[in-house]
Length: 270
Image (cartoon, rainbow, N blue to C red; front, side, top):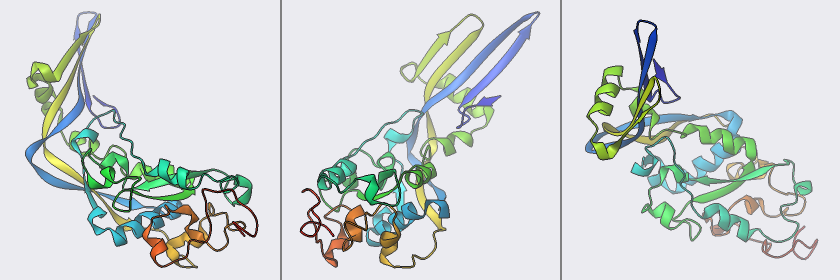
Protein backbone atom coordinates (compact mmCIF):
# COMPACT_ATOMS: atom_id res chain seq x y z
CA UNK A 1 0.00 0.00 0.00
CA UNK A 2 0.96 3.65 -0.48
CA UNK A 3 0.95 5.94 2.55
CA UNK A 4 1.23 9.66 3.32
CA UNK A 5 -0.26 12.78 1.65
CA UNK A 6 2.36 12.47 -1.10
CA UNK A 7 2.03 8.68 -1.28
CA UNK A 8 5.78 8.65 -0.76
CA UNK A 9 5.83 5.51 1.40
CA UNK A 10 5.46 2.09 -0.18
CA UNK A 11 4.64 -0.57 2.41
CA UNK A 12 4.97 -4.23 1.51
CA UNK A 13 3.94 -6.95 3.97
CA UNK A 14 4.95 -10.60 3.68
CA UNK A 15 3.68 -13.56 5.68
CA UNK A 16 5.79 -16.59 6.52
CA UNK A 17 3.82 -18.98 8.67
CA UNK A 18 2.51 -16.95 11.59
CA UNK A 19 5.08 -14.16 11.15
CA UNK A 20 4.39 -10.94 9.25
CA UNK A 21 7.33 -8.89 7.98
CA UNK A 22 6.89 -5.29 6.84
CA UNK A 23 9.24 -3.39 4.55
CA UNK A 24 8.77 0.29 3.79
CA UNK A 25 10.46 2.25 1.02
CA UNK A 26 10.20 5.94 1.94
CA UNK A 27 11.12 8.88 -0.30
CA UNK A 28 12.13 11.79 1.94
CA UNK A 29 13.24 14.16 -0.81
CA UNK A 30 13.59 14.33 -4.56
CA UNK A 31 16.35 15.76 -6.70
CA UNK A 32 15.42 17.33 -10.01
CA UNK A 33 17.59 15.87 -12.76
CA UNK A 34 19.65 18.45 -14.72
CA UNK A 35 17.40 18.15 -17.75
CA UNK A 36 14.13 17.48 -15.91
CA UNK A 37 11.02 18.40 -17.90
CA UNK A 38 9.19 21.51 -16.60
CA UNK A 39 5.74 20.42 -15.39
CA UNK A 40 3.07 22.91 -14.37
CA UNK A 41 1.21 22.65 -11.08
CA UNK A 42 -1.90 24.72 -11.77
CA UNK A 43 -3.91 26.03 -8.80
CA UNK A 44 -7.26 27.77 -8.34
CA UNK A 45 -7.46 30.83 -6.08
CA UNK A 46 -10.85 30.33 -4.44
CA UNK A 47 -13.45 32.98 -3.68
CA UNK A 48 -13.20 32.05 0.02
CA UNK A 49 -9.67 33.52 -0.06
CA UNK A 50 -10.78 36.78 -1.71
CA UNK A 51 -8.27 39.15 -0.12
CA UNK A 52 -5.39 36.73 -0.70
CA UNK A 53 -6.44 36.34 -4.33
CA UNK A 54 -6.66 40.11 -4.84
CA UNK A 55 -3.19 40.37 -3.32
CA UNK A 56 -1.58 37.73 -5.53
CA UNK A 57 -3.27 38.89 -8.74
CA UNK A 58 -2.30 42.53 -8.14
CA UNK A 59 1.30 41.57 -7.32
CA UNK A 60 1.55 39.46 -10.47
CA UNK A 61 0.00 42.21 -12.62
CA UNK A 62 3.01 44.45 -11.94
CA UNK A 63 5.57 41.64 -11.60
CA UNK A 64 4.79 39.24 -14.42
CA UNK A 65 7.97 37.25 -13.74
CA UNK A 66 6.13 35.87 -10.69
CA UNK A 67 3.20 34.48 -12.69
CA UNK A 68 5.00 31.14 -12.87
CA UNK A 69 7.37 30.08 -10.09
CA UNK A 70 9.84 27.26 -10.68
CA UNK A 71 10.27 25.04 -7.63
CA UNK A 72 13.60 25.50 -5.85
CA UNK A 73 15.50 22.32 -5.07
CA UNK A 74 15.32 23.15 -1.35
CA UNK A 75 11.53 22.70 -1.35
CA UNK A 76 11.58 19.19 -2.80
CA UNK A 77 11.32 17.41 0.53
CA UNK A 78 8.81 16.26 3.12
CA UNK A 79 10.18 18.76 5.65
CA UNK A 80 11.01 22.27 4.58
CA UNK A 81 11.15 25.63 6.33
CA UNK A 82 12.11 28.60 4.18
CA UNK A 83 11.66 32.01 5.78
CA UNK A 84 12.13 35.48 4.33
CA UNK A 85 12.08 39.03 5.68
CA UNK A 86 9.12 40.82 4.07
CA UNK A 87 6.62 40.10 6.84
CA UNK A 88 9.03 41.26 9.54
CA UNK A 89 9.59 44.48 7.60
CA UNK A 90 5.84 45.08 7.34
CA UNK A 91 5.56 44.75 11.13
CA UNK A 92 8.45 47.16 11.63
CA UNK A 93 6.85 49.67 9.26
CA UNK A 94 3.55 49.46 11.20
CA UNK A 95 4.89 49.28 14.74
CA UNK A 96 3.34 52.53 16.01
CA UNK A 97 1.03 52.16 19.00
CA UNK A 98 -2.65 51.75 18.15
CA UNK A 99 -2.49 51.04 14.43
CA UNK A 100 -2.84 47.25 14.76
CA UNK A 101 -5.29 47.26 17.66
CA UNK A 102 -7.98 44.73 16.68
CA UNK A 103 -10.69 47.01 18.05
CA UNK A 104 -10.03 49.35 15.11
CA UNK A 105 -10.74 46.85 12.33
CA UNK A 106 -13.59 44.60 11.20
CA UNK A 107 -11.67 41.33 11.41
CA UNK A 108 -10.19 40.24 14.73
CA UNK A 109 -7.19 38.17 13.62
CA UNK A 110 -5.10 39.30 10.66
CA UNK A 111 -1.96 37.85 9.07
CA UNK A 112 0.84 39.32 6.99
CA UNK A 113 0.48 37.50 3.69
CA UNK A 114 3.55 37.43 1.45
CA UNK A 115 3.84 36.78 -2.28
CA UNK A 116 5.70 35.07 -3.82
CA UNK A 117 5.64 32.54 -0.97
CA UNK A 118 8.99 31.74 0.62
CA UNK A 119 8.38 28.04 -0.12
CA UNK A 120 8.75 28.75 -3.83
CA UNK A 121 11.88 30.90 -3.62
CA UNK A 122 15.39 29.49 -3.70
CA UNK A 123 18.17 31.02 -1.56
CA UNK A 124 19.47 33.12 -4.46
CA UNK A 125 16.15 34.16 -5.95
CA UNK A 126 16.00 37.96 -6.31
CA UNK A 127 12.57 37.94 -4.66
CA UNK A 128 14.18 36.40 -1.57
CA UNK A 129 17.40 38.42 -1.62
CA UNK A 130 15.40 41.65 -1.83
CA UNK A 131 12.70 40.52 0.58
CA UNK A 132 12.04 43.17 3.18
CA UNK A 133 14.39 45.57 1.38
CA UNK A 134 12.56 46.86 -1.69
CA UNK A 135 9.78 46.08 -4.15
CA UNK A 136 11.95 43.66 -6.12
CA UNK A 137 11.44 41.34 -3.14
CA UNK A 138 8.29 39.73 -1.77
CA UNK A 139 5.28 41.99 -1.32
CA UNK A 140 2.85 41.87 1.60
CA UNK A 141 -0.82 42.45 2.34
CA UNK A 142 -2.34 42.35 5.84
CA UNK A 143 -5.43 40.14 5.46
CA UNK A 144 -7.77 37.85 7.46
CA UNK A 145 -5.86 34.92 8.93
CA UNK A 146 -8.21 32.28 7.50
CA UNK A 147 -7.73 33.59 3.96
CA UNK A 148 -3.96 33.70 4.27
CA UNK A 149 -3.72 30.16 5.60
CA UNK A 150 -6.33 28.77 3.24
CA UNK A 151 -4.63 30.24 0.19
CA UNK A 152 -1.31 28.77 1.33
CA UNK A 153 -2.74 25.32 0.64
CA UNK A 154 -2.42 26.06 -3.10
CA UNK A 155 1.35 25.55 -3.10
CA UNK A 156 1.79 23.36 -0.02
CA UNK A 157 3.85 20.36 -1.15
CA UNK A 158 3.75 21.49 -4.79
CA UNK A 159 7.49 20.90 -5.23
CA UNK A 160 7.44 17.37 -3.82
CA UNK A 161 4.00 15.76 -3.99
CA UNK A 162 3.16 15.76 -7.75
CA UNK A 163 6.31 13.97 -9.03
CA UNK A 164 6.14 11.39 -6.22
CA UNK A 165 2.43 10.69 -6.60
CA UNK A 166 2.99 9.94 -10.28
CA UNK A 167 5.51 7.19 -9.50
CA UNK A 168 4.35 3.60 -9.71
CA UNK A 169 4.99 1.20 -6.85
CA UNK A 170 7.78 -0.38 -8.90
CA UNK A 171 9.34 3.05 -9.49
CA UNK A 172 9.48 3.77 -5.76
CA UNK A 173 10.84 0.34 -4.92
CA UNK A 174 13.59 0.49 -7.53
CA UNK A 175 14.56 4.12 -6.93
CA UNK A 176 14.87 3.62 -3.18
CA UNK A 177 16.71 0.32 -3.59
CA UNK A 178 19.17 1.75 -6.11
CA UNK A 179 19.78 5.04 -4.28
CA UNK A 180 23.49 5.41 -3.37
CA UNK A 181 24.42 4.79 0.25
CA UNK A 182 25.04 8.48 0.95
CA UNK A 183 21.44 9.20 -0.11
CA UNK A 184 19.88 6.37 1.87
CA UNK A 185 19.31 5.20 5.45
CA UNK A 186 18.05 1.79 6.54
CA UNK A 187 16.38 1.40 9.93
CA UNK A 188 15.52 -2.05 11.33
CA UNK A 189 12.97 -2.81 14.02
CA UNK A 190 11.73 -6.23 15.12
CA UNK A 191 9.58 -7.11 12.11
CA UNK A 192 9.90 -3.82 10.25
CA UNK A 193 12.55 -2.47 7.93
CA UNK A 194 12.35 1.11 6.75
CA UNK A 195 14.54 2.50 4.00
CA UNK A 196 14.63 6.29 3.67
CA UNK A 197 16.09 7.77 0.49
CA UNK A 198 16.53 10.83 -1.69
CA UNK A 199 15.81 9.95 -5.31
CA UNK A 200 16.16 11.63 -8.67
CA UNK A 201 13.16 12.59 -10.85
CA UNK A 202 12.90 13.73 -14.45
CA UNK A 203 10.15 16.31 -13.86
CA UNK A 204 10.56 19.80 -12.40
CA UNK A 205 7.33 21.39 -11.05
CA UNK A 206 6.40 24.98 -11.85
CA UNK A 207 3.63 26.62 -9.83
CA UNK A 208 1.06 28.91 -11.38
CA UNK A 209 -2.44 30.12 -10.51
CA UNK A 210 -4.60 29.24 -13.47
CA UNK A 211 -8.02 30.32 -12.19
CA UNK A 212 -9.12 33.31 -10.10
CA UNK A 213 -12.51 33.06 -8.37
CA UNK A 214 -12.59 36.34 -6.43
CA UNK A 215 -15.31 38.72 -7.58
CA UNK A 216 -14.52 42.17 -8.95
CA UNK A 217 -13.97 44.48 -5.98
CA UNK A 218 -16.85 46.96 -5.66
CA UNK A 219 -14.58 49.83 -4.68
CA UNK A 220 -11.53 49.22 -6.90
CA UNK A 221 -7.90 49.31 -5.69
CA UNK A 222 -7.68 45.52 -6.04
CA UNK A 223 -9.91 45.04 -3.01
CA UNK A 224 -7.89 47.19 -0.60
CA UNK A 225 -10.95 49.23 0.40
CA UNK A 226 -12.87 45.99 1.06
CA UNK A 227 -10.15 44.52 3.25
CA UNK A 228 -11.55 43.92 6.77
CA UNK A 229 -8.01 44.23 8.16
CA UNK A 230 -7.79 47.88 7.08
CA UNK A 231 -8.48 50.00 10.20
CA UNK A 232 -10.64 52.35 8.18
CA UNK A 233 -11.84 54.37 11.17
CA UNK A 234 -8.33 55.50 12.12
CA UNK A 235 -6.61 55.32 8.69
CA UNK A 236 -9.52 56.52 6.57
CA UNK A 237 -7.36 58.13 3.91
CA UNK A 238 -5.07 55.15 3.37
CA UNK A 239 -6.44 51.74 2.29
CA UNK A 240 -2.79 50.96 1.50
CA UNK A 241 -2.24 50.43 5.23
CA UNK A 242 -2.18 46.69 4.47
CA UNK A 243 0.85 47.05 2.18
CA UNK A 244 4.57 47.66 2.59
CA UNK A 245 5.34 51.36 2.53
CA UNK A 246 7.52 50.96 -0.58
CA UNK A 247 4.78 49.14 -2.52
CA UNK A 248 4.12 50.48 -6.03
CA UNK A 249 0.63 51.43 -4.82
CA UNK A 250 2.17 54.51 -3.22
CA UNK A 251 3.54 55.70 -6.56
CA UNK A 252 0.02 56.90 -7.35
CA UNK A 253 -1.49 57.30 -3.88
CA UNK A 254 -0.62 59.51 -0.92
CA UNK A 255 0.93 58.07 2.23
CA UNK A 256 -0.77 60.35 4.77
CA UNK A 257 0.22 58.73 8.06
CA UNK A 258 3.38 57.65 9.85
CA UNK A 259 2.72 54.08 10.95
CA UNK A 260 5.99 53.85 12.84
CA UNK A 261 4.74 56.55 15.19
CA UNK A 262 1.76 56.20 17.51
CA UNK A 263 -1.74 56.83 16.25
CA UNK A 264 -2.95 60.29 17.28
CA UNK A 265 -6.43 61.25 16.16
CA UNK A 266 -6.37 64.25 13.88
CA UNK A 267 -2.61 64.70 13.66
CA UNK A 268 -1.43 61.18 12.80
CA UNK A 269 -4.60 59.35 11.89
CA UNK A 270 -8.26 60.04 11.26
